[in-house]
Structures are given as structure tokens and as C-alpha cells.
Length: 222
Image 1 (cartoon, rainbow, N blue to C red):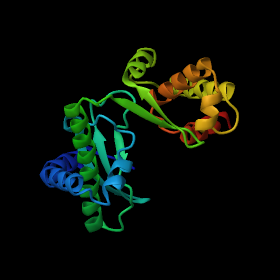
Image 2 (cartoon, one colour):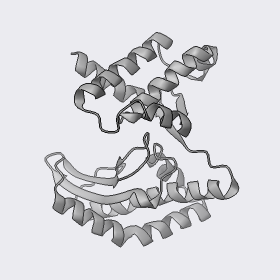
Image 3 (tube, rainbow, N blue to C red):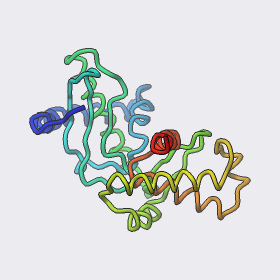
Image 4 (cartoon, one colour):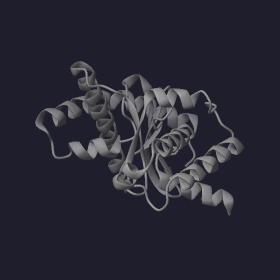
């Protein structure tokens, strides 16, 4: 997908236009425990601690592969997805506008959820990384900050490849097969630390799942 300045500017206007409606929709969904609530939360699974100030643009872009609806973030912390795609591919521009509102509503659910946690003292920002065996690693903010000091904020392709391949190798050296909760419990603290560090490194270079990281590593090795 090619994004030009005009598309970004239009996305900023769309963001401003839809923000109040999306916020109201999110409040209503939370208050009524709407059945769609868990789907909203699933869309924002990798954006724990999301804030409105991170919103940059709400894009609708039409290309060879159809229409894409994407929320772009700016200034978000390391480990948080800064490009969030709508869960469905719209068939036309009218559907795309509805999907944009849905995506922004999901973002506001995440924001209001985190505000509620801050209000009741349960907020503890973490960053999710999904393993192939179904285990979700919750990387604490302190770990992300520590690893972030070692991985450049803006990495070139070569550095990204090194981080990617080293992290996948650390997975391979720490466990065999797929990592589920039972396998995790059987590992030693040393392996836990290596796996968490590898996941944090992958988050720093834009990978949020083991599946995506392994696929990219295999492509580099081919």
C-alpha cells in the first residue's frame, strides 16, 4: 500500500471527525457490556496502554489489493503496534468509512479500559507477544525500556535481520516444538529470561508473534 501526504492529511481530518462518535460508542459498549466488546479488545491486543495523544491518522487507501483501513500512531512506546489494520477488508468506500469508525471505536475501548485500570490502581503496562503454542508473553514495561536501550529506535534492514535471526535462534535454543503454558512451567528461570528477552527484541523491531518472526527469518535465510 502506497501512502502519500494527501492520504495522511485526509486521514487526520477523518480522525478528528469520527473521534467523538467513536469515543461515545466505546463508552456505550463498555457500560452495556456489548457482545462486540471482546472483538474490539482483540483488535487492540498489542496496544495495552494506548492513549489518544498517540493518534496520528485514520487512513483509507485503495490499491491493487483492495481497500485498506489503518490507524497510524505516532510517539507510541516501544513494543506497541503503531500501524493497526481494521479486522475486515471493506468491499467499497462506504463500507471502508464504517470500518474506520469500528477501528477507532476499538481504539477508544482500549484507551478507556486502561484509564479504568489507572483509576482503580491495577494499571501495569505490558506488551503482548504471542507464541505459536498459544502462550502469550506479557513483557513488562521495564524490560522493554531496558531492551529498547540496546536496540536502535530506527533500525535499518541489516540490523533488523540480525535482531530477528538472533531472537529466533534464542527461541530454538530454549525450547523445542511449540511453547505452551505446560512447557513454560517446565523450563528453568534461565530459559524464561532468554525467551522474554528475545520476545522483547522482536517487539522492538515490529514483530508481535512468533509466527510472523519465524516466517520473516525463513525468508531472509532462503
